[in-house]
Image 1 (tube, rainbow, N blue to C red):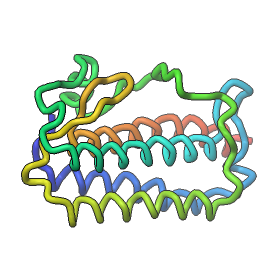
Image 2: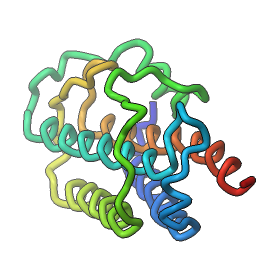
Image 3: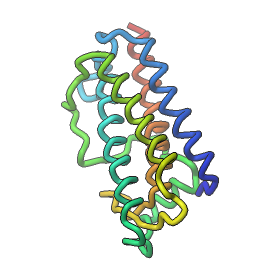
Image 4: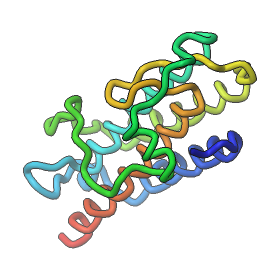
Length: 176
């Protein structure tokens, strides 16, 4: 598991900026195009990342504010393996909260604005929060307990995981 906290924040910023910058390459129609009936469009992937990362940011704040609450609890073994490997496995992961009919984005601006807000919110939190004594943890629905830094690292790994999905969707979009 990565312990260089500055590097975790830098990697998060690099990965979210990649998602932000790449929005420029697509029209709204392209973002809403599904490569198959049973898969998400790229726009839906963006919506998913925005919704999940917003949840992760709230968990970062809650863990930071919770002092030593759940400090003795740890993440699930599967999560430990992901953290040790520095990423999620290259496969579709089961998530009961994912809906194939996730809403489509209404505009590129909506996606850009939301991604930019998340990046600014995370950087504000890590610039102004007292992280020296941040030992509290909150519970992830499938991976048990994360502290503030682990939530940040998980958020980055999650976005990077979806870059592989984005590549598959791109092949469909640009092949058409």
